Amino acid sequence: MSGEQVYRAPLHRRLRPLYFLSPTLLILLSVTLFPLIYSLYLATHTVILTNPMLSGWSLQDNLREVFLESPEYWESFATTLILVVTVVSIEFVLGLMLAYFFYNNFTGRDFIFPFFLMPMMLTPVVVGTIWRFLFNGEFGLIAGLLKAMGVVNYSILNEPSTALVGIIIADVWQWTPFMLLLMLAGMRALPTSPFEAAQVDGASRFQIFRDIMLPMMKPVIVIAVLIRMIDAFNRTFDTIYIMTNGGPGRVTETLAVMAFRSSFEYFFMHQGAIVALSMLVIIIIMTKVLGRFMAGPRED
Amino acid sequence: MAPKSRLYWIVCYFILALYGVFTLLPIAYLVVSSFKTQLQIYAGVSSTFWFTPTLESYRFIFETKPILHMLMNTLIVSVGSTVFSLVFGTIAAYALARYRFRGRDDLAFYILSIRMFPPIVAALPIFMIFNNLNLLDSKIGLIIAYTSFNLPFVVWMMTGFIKAVPVQLEEAAMVDGQSQLGAIRDILLPVLRPSILAVAIFCIIFSWNEFLFALILTKSQAKTLPVAIPEFITWTEVGWNYVAAAGMVLVMPVLIFSFLAQRYMVRGMSMGAIKD
Picture 1 (cartoon, helix red, strand yellow):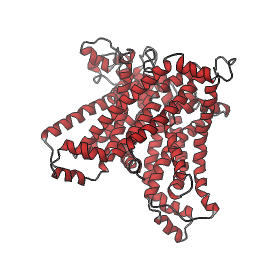
Picture 2 (cartoon, helix red, strand yellow):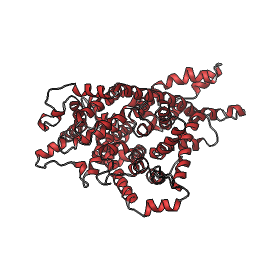
Picture 3 (cartoon, rainbow over the protein chains, first blue to last red):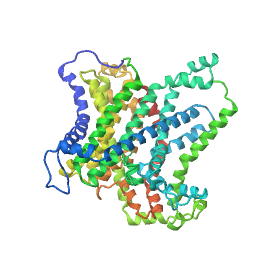
Picture 4 (tube, chains in turn orange, blue):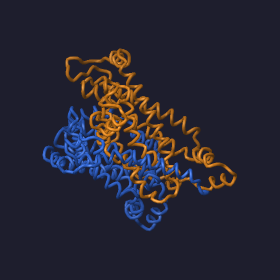
């Protein structure tokens, strides 16, 4: 690596990077370490804000309550899994395809490109409201189109069988541009000589794309998919909160929504803490496994 | 590459056009709905884009809710947290990029991994702490919270950017008698300016759009505009024109801003995130 000092400096010089890092570390520790400890306290006790008489150590009871006594946790787990896998795959395929088209030179490309990025700049809450009203069965645009095709007053978000599809469409709409942006940046960073060589050797365009371009883009793809997976898992909260608030019934209640509702709607703080902590465990496992699986053996 | 067949171009344009409509239609729907009356909302598909525009909804939302106050809160909190996270984050990134010390890579990984921390895990405890410190419903509280989310991103991006600048430039200045701080100020920072700008844009947009923490940590004084949006949705769902108008007020500044700053954002993404 270039640009690093290797000589042995006096102590006060050697401590200098720590001074530089201390404000950042102080802030980050206070928003992660303390919440973590506090969540662990909540998870191991009975804490119900509406009933302060109940208290004390109850880890086993809490765990049984959340994981065994009702199927709610596992329903939310499945919902989250379906949501994350579906949106990330669709966004990846769409983003890659669009990036491949934008990789070409054509008139007006640089003019239309910013418009394709617009959804990712919008406030997720506003995106949620737009899609909620587009899907509205009485006056929404999509319902109107369905009506024209003979389906009367169908509210996608009010039907248990299609509510999650509505959420998925809104998420794909907002975050495909992010994939497009990263994929395009990755493609443009590639050298073109391998493609030209393959073409001379008679490879078809699809072969070049599949056998040369995709493998060369692997680092970008890994980063983009990982970022999107983590965000879809952690942060799809806003749109769901606005569009369905977990309903109808619980069909769109992901783990994040479940944690929020347990804590801030039912005031069962210990349940909310356990669900939230389980998310942290899942995310750690997910990144470890995926990181290893997708990056292959490391070459440092 | 060699010229492409006509079929290729037809498919390419067709898919781009199709996706373009899919992308723009919801935004167009938001724009037109904000200029409608309650009655026009119900008028059916054929008149979705054909109606007499009115500013009635905008007048209504500004009269019934402190929209300007909330907009100012959103702006102050976004800019405040962006400034703090840029200052602290760039200093930390400098340490990670320019020094070699024990535990450096672990520290860098710890800072980056905060990005994966589910916000909901931090939400409840932060609510409790802020309650005790009297920081609930205050702009300072929100600025602290947003700074902590922006910091990992700033540190990660800026470390990459600083590493890309040859250290010899600063060393030469220091040999010429500049102090370390002087070298940073006169040599490093000017080179980094476009990168810092790119990172700042992302921080501002993220803070501007944040919802969960604003929802939990504010009530009235420090309430930001995203939290007010759901309040326009009544259970009968009739207020769509008001929701749309409020949404426009919230979204337009960011859209205009990001169009102006597009150049820097694309450069920022392709330099820091990808190359490292």
